[in-house]
Length: 348
Image (tube, rainbow, N blue to C red):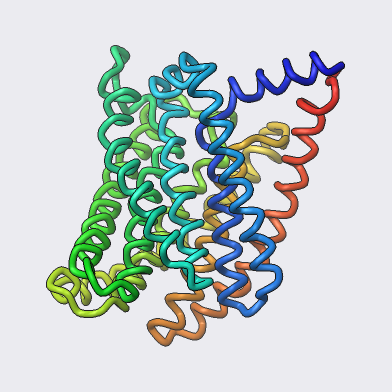
């Protein structure tokens, strides 16, 4: 029995999707939202779970790197999975920002350094290994919703930098530059990624089995861009902030409107996939890539509504937060059942 458990655990580590840090992202962003909405106990419990999940996933990833390096190499070469590595960047920053809300800004800064370096490294490595380095062509045929996680990672770097910029006396101009630069890169990456994914949908065979929950990241990337923009607008005057504040503030509202417009389309796509075309709805790690966008949309609405004095936007965000939390509960329960069924007990 013990040997069987160890073998199942090893198999789970070997096949661990690089996008599992989306669980950290989803848990952390809902914790942030609950903090905004004055539910400190629930927010703190989610923070503890977020931190525990982050540490656990770091350990599992390190184990996988040592024992199953070929599996990680295969992930880097797979366009359907490679961009999931950017969830590490985003998860690191979401946890860091949430810790900063407790006054722990040093961990926020440390995690920003880690995530920033990972963002730069992965930003050059993954597009080459997963896309341009492949012999198969055309490139557009390999695009999918996970590619938007690159955008999310860029914007979380901006949010983390904007979070600690008012706190530290030294390096404030550099943090402002980093925030504006990563936000701008994220905006341009969204435009490019959206064009590539749209061409994929229009020019190549696309069935209900291809419409995974990861396509919700297209909306989440817009929402995180809104939140990052709102945080940049609130930063103290610095050369890069002063010349971009009006542009960033205006685009934040535009992106929020477009994210809102996308939600009914994504819901309809899910209905078509599971109800009309009868694709079974079962647990998959990509479901966390749906939960995070819901939570991020809620937090972005709450923050933008308060920062720009738009009470209706804040109210929409508050309502969306509880929807996101309910979805989080369902997916968390499904994940727990999945782990027990496939790892803890023998599945026949």
